[in-house]
Every structure is written in structure tokens, then in C-alpha cells.
Length: 146
Image (tube, rainbow, N blue to C red; front, side):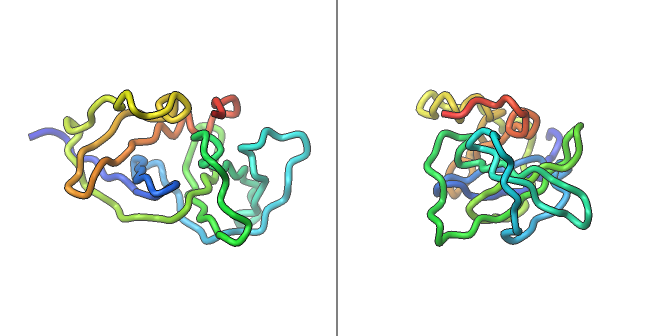
């Protein structure tokens, strides 16, 4: 029996994603955002997190997907990085799952290059695949946009 890991899960465009629960600082409903002039299209803006300015990254754009409609609210998954907290904008929040580390498999060939670049691999669950997001690459300022 190997090491168990907790994953905080969320959904983007109907796909199930997860990040190591230890990387998650908090989850927030949609927050007021200040636009960042000249920022890439995946940087949606800055949010004020109890006096701390946090960049908000549109994970749909990072993954090369269409943005949410204007009438749809995203959720903020605030993750810890070496440079401080970063908010990943996701469609909705899922559960926290306990999974064996050895179950992580390589990302399937059917996944787009933009998505593959941001994934550590996938976990097969009874409900389908859980795409395990690499928080470092997903929050990097120069992450590729499909």
C-alpha cells in the first residue's frame, strides 16, 4: 500500500480536475476584480484577499478553452505558490478525494497540448478521469495559452 494523497477537485468545461489539497489556501465565490492593463487574456485581473492583492488566472483560457459566458459566475480556487497566493478561476468546486499516489497515470494522448502542458497526469475514478493539475505550471506567468 502506497502513500495516500488528498486532492481538492473542481470542474472546468465539464472536465474533472484536481490539485494537491496541501496547495489550496481557500475557495471563494466570484470576487470583484480589477483589470490589469496589457495582461495576457488568461489573466482576468486582481482580487483583494483581505488586503493582499492576488492575481486571478482564468483556467479556461490557460487550458485553451472558451471563457465562461458573461452571465456565468466562476469560483476562485486560491492556491499557494512560491510567489504567494494565486487565484485560479474555475467553473465549480468539487469534493476532496483521498487517492493512492501510485494510481497516477500519464496524461492520455487525446488531451490537447495546452492541457497536457499543465497536467501531472490522470487518476481513474469510478466516476471517470480526474485530471491532476500542476499548480506550478498552471500559475506560471508564461504558461502557454492554447
